Image 1 (cartoon, rainbow, N blue to C red):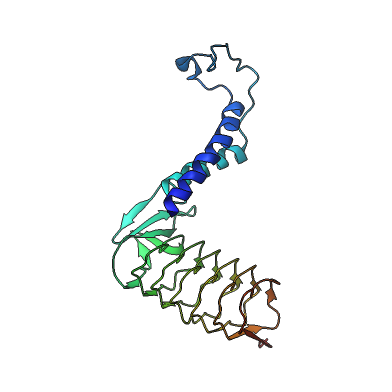
Image 2: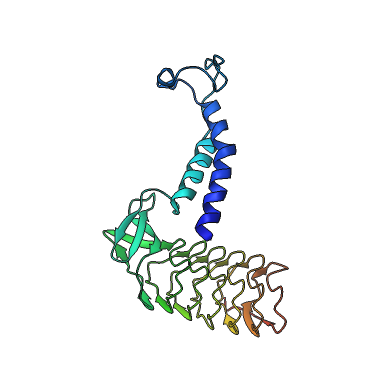
Amino acid sequence: MKRFAALLFATVFLMFTLPSVAEDFENFDDFDDFGEYDEFGDEMEFDDLGEASEEDVSNAKNAMNALSGYHDLDVQEEGDFKYEALEDGETCQAVRYTGFDEDVSVPEKMKNLSVKMLYQTFSDCTLVETVILPETIEIIDNMAFWKCTSLKTVEMQEGLKAIGRCSFGGCSELESLDFPESLEYIDEMVFIGCVKLKEVSFGKNLKSIGSQAFTACVNLEKVRIPSGTEIAEDAFEQCPKVEIERYEADV
């Protein structure tokens, strides 16, 4: 269902985006190969076409990438993981776990690249129960563990700085998480629908908690947060039992 929705979105996106990109390209050498006529048989003019903007090209690429199911098209495999290199040429992000184990350890490297990020890596992996992350991980990005309905815990290491949008959304068996002191950002809807989550405590370096971060965590009872952390007004919607404890972080 998720893949169908993504395909539908991408198709609609392409319908509206790609025509505008085509109108902006200039000096395309292959136009003559297709004939300079539109679908009604009228002659088309290309003399006044402008150069495509970076935004147009980016939007078109993102739409095509949505069809692929990954953030980019340069996806490689290493063991039970698919990954793609990041721009620095030294790190990568794991974009898909393809195994069937209940207990999974994410490797520090894939080929010769250090694993820096997770991106939709375990999304809809309903068999996975525990995941151990390496010290190289700095970002758990969008939907990394989305709807992992058997997931109970994720072992995070120091060095983790941010948890992206919907990363743990719908993890209905998730009971507890130990966050490292290095964590700085919790994005929107990160723990939405984690109905068994009862207690969480954040380290002194946490700077912000995003909108609806804990929405519908109906059994969440206690959250310990540094006094200087910014919290979105709706971060704890539909959390009837929650008590938020603010503490002064050591300087």
